[in-house]
Image (cartoon, rainbow, N blue to C red; front, top):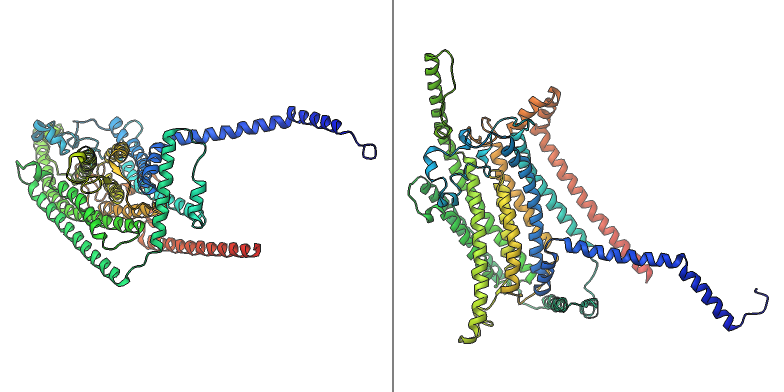
Length: 620
């Protein structure tokens, strides 16, 4: 009652207590309780999702001790593992399994049978180690697959599936790489300006007061210390004075020396590959002669990156910029070696194509002679009763190329693991236990503990993935080998880093290097597509091995499928669409459209920035 007498104080307290009890015991209390339960469930579910991310805790532990630059390599390795797992599912599910389950079994036709002259040694370890013998005539390589248009009761079109899966490998990889680059770009642009009061923010907001585990607290302490080191290096680099003329001279000198190293390595690879072709025509050659190409390429991959890093010390770039230069130079080294290897291998392919013509004519002449003699003697002609192991066959250049890529991949795996075991672990054990009785301090001087080679490991992953993309068309099982390699590398290298390596002396942030890695991966994806496209469009397939045997070109399988499985008017439409007069303008229009979108995106960003500045000024 507003107009009546006011209640006494003790009466007001009783009324407020009664109303509060009603509120607590009523729907408000239930709503608050449910909201708290929902927040706790979301927090637990987020923790559960984090626990389900493969190797997330291992990578966080590495990041806390070695910084984001080393952790970015393991994040990149995990991403590559996911991509290769999808590619393996495509190839294994659509090519390998249908051929094994519904195709002609092993030993029934020549392409799936070990020749008679090789059967005695087909199971020897030295032969299998070179991917010859039974491995050569297995589903691991191109030559095993038959050219039947349909197989099994499902009438599965294996040649068409083989071709489309080979194209889909590049298409899916391109889509994933571009999507990842766009995602990283959006994250980088949405970070905002974090350069103001850097040390104050790190000092007062870095610690997590919810930590209760001593080991987690130690990791967090190491992470904060590493973060301060990163910021100090960035601040020192931004305020450094230097002699610009001397610096330009030293950088030009460093680039000249590195170009000389690249040219020398390319010439050495070409010389070794040509000599290996001479060795392949000889008998009773040694182990080194059989594996000389893989050994030389692995040694160049071992010694050239440290040489580049030594030469790069003349330039004195910021660590992040120096890492990108080092990545680019090692990328040029690997790419030059790979393309030199391919050019020398193409000479061998051309020789095999010439040899194939002679064997093809001889095989046809032999079968035709037997056929004519049977027709003259008997009224009913029977097919020649020749064992598949005795039929003359061509070298099958596609399988030869696939074997070379598998050898390179396996040798790269072995060399990488041996380097980690000897160069990191044994070196760390020597420094740790011999330092007490040595003449000088081994930890501070030579040899000291090894640092994790970020540029060499990242470029090793990218170079290996380029070999997988190129070689998977000729060796479908190569992707499975790479999946096993990436799986074991994650555990082996995480163990080696935490047990044998020390943090870099100049620690730096690498959060913005992810797109640089993806840019290199996109470039090698495009360069890996070129040799495969050349073989598909230009080289004739082997006539007695592989799913495209009997055709003039590999892409003829598409025209065959269109003519036999589609109506006539659709076949005419596809023939018109495949006209280069339409393809070239379409590609040019796509490039123009991308340019317009890029310009529009820049204009939108500029307008948004101007609007943001205007609103900020009006607010002030």
